[in-house]
Image 1: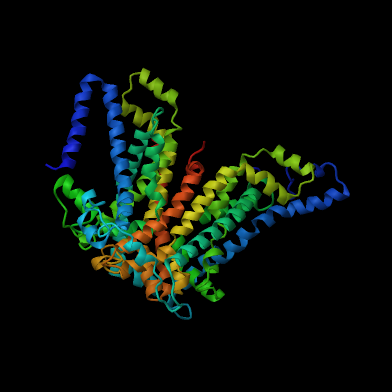
Image 2 (image 1 turned 135 degrees about the vertical axis):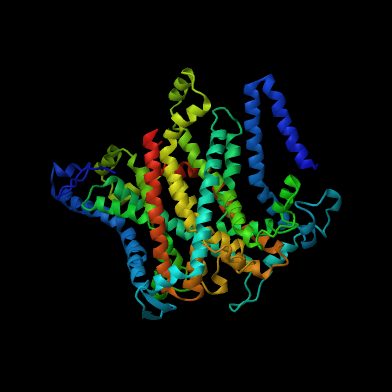
Length: 324
Length: 306
C-alpha cells in the first residue's frame, strides 16, 4: 500500500489535462475523478448491505431471543450467559480446539516436510507429485465428508482394511460410531484434504530461500539441521505465520466436513455430540431451533476467540522470527 | 505377514542396501519412494470412489476396489448406481432428476464467478491505478473486514435475506457473493504491476476509463483472472451452508445439499450417493486442469512476494 498522503485535491496520475487545461479536458477530468468511486460502487453497496449492516445487526440480534426471523424479545446478556454455560457449547469448543491443535500440530509439519521433499531442482515428476498431493483440495468439504463416511465404515471401509493390512488393527473399528474415534476421524479426513494445500504455500516460500546463503553455510561446514534452523526457517517464517494463522481461523470455523461425515451418525454431530463444532452448535441453535439471537451471540463469541488466538499467534511467531 | 507389509519392508531394505553403495543415490531413492507412497495414499480415495460408483451393493462390501477380472460381470460391476441416481424422483415440485441439480449448481457457480470476476477486477483496478480521497480508508476497511470470520454474519444475514424477500431464490446466493474484499485485493495486487505509461498512452489516444480497464488492463492480468475464476467457481460449487439455509424448494437445490440428503435416503445403497459425488467432482476437475498454472500462482500471491 502506498503511503503517499492524499491531497485535498488529488492529482490524477498520468492525466496531462492538469497541465494543459482545455474545455474538452475539463469535462473528462471531472469524469475521471469520479471514475474510481464508480468502479468501487458495487463493492460498497454489497458490502454495506451484506457485511457492515449484518455485522452491526449481529450485535443487536445477540441481545434478543428470536423464533425465526419474525418474532423476538429483548433478553439482554442472557444469550451470552446461556451459551457460555451450555455444556453443548463447552463440548463444541473443546472439539474445535482439539481439531485446531491437531490440524496445526500434524498437518503443518507434514506439509512443510512434503514441500522440502518436493523442493528439488531437477525432478521430472515434481509436477505430478505436486498435483497428486494437492488434488484432494479440489474436493469440497461436503464431498470429502461423504467419501470418508464410507471409507471409515467398519469391516469394508477402505481405511479400516488398509489399517488392518498395515498393522493388523482396526478392521471392525466404528470410527464414526465410537465417540472416542470421531475426532480422530475428522482430523484424518481434514488432513487428507488440506496437507497439499498448505504444502503449496511452503513450496512457494522455499523457492524464496536464498541459495547463496545455503551454499555459503555448507562451505562453512554447517550440517543440514543447522541450515534448516538458521537459513530455511527465518526465510519461510512470514509464510509459516500466514499458514498458521489462516489454518487456525479455518479450523475454528469447521462445519461442513464433520456435518456431512457424521450425517448418518448422530444427525451430523456424532454420537453424544462427539463431532459437534462451534459452527455446528451455531447452526443447530440458529437454523434448526430458529433462535437467530443465540446464533448471533455464538458468532460473536467465536469471532472474539479467533481474534485473540490470531493476535497471540502473530505475536509469538513474530518474536520467534526476530530471534533467529 | 501380508503383501502390503512385505512390499514396505522390501522398499526399506533397498534403502539400507543403497546407503553403503552411494549415499546420495540412497537419499534420492528415499525421497522418490516417500513421495510416491504419499501420492498413492492421496490418490487412493479417488480411485476407490470411481470403482465404488460402478459396483453393485454386494460387490461393494466384498472388494475394496474392483473385483478380480474373473469375478467381473454385470452382477458385480454395472451402472445400477447411476440408474438409481439419474431416475426422476417425485417431489412437491413434480418429478426432478439429478441433472436438474447439476444444472442448478452449474448455473449458480458460473453466475457468481462471472459477476464477481467483473466487480472484483473493476474494484481492484480502481484501488491499484487511481489516487482518490478515501482510498486508504477503503483499503484499511477491506483488510479489516477480511479478518472477521464469516460465521458471525450467518444469523443476521438470514434475517436480511428474509426481509428482502429473497428466501428460496438464487438472488440470496448470487448477490451477496457478487463481490468481496479478498477478490478485489487479488486483482489490486496483480494490477499494481501494470505500467502507468501504458494507461497514460491509452488516455492520450482518447480511450475512456472503462475501455482502458476492459481492453488494456484485463488482458494483462489474465493469469490472475484464471486463478480467481477457479477459486470463485470452486467456492460456489462446493458451498453447502448458505444454499442449505436459503434454498427450500427441492427443484432449486444444489449438488452438495442434495447429496447430503441422499446420504440419508440411500443409507443401504450408498453406491448411489457415491456415484453422485463422483459426478459432482468432474466440473471442478476439468476447470482445474484448464487453469492449473494460474491457480497455483494466484493462491500464493497473497502470501509470498515473487
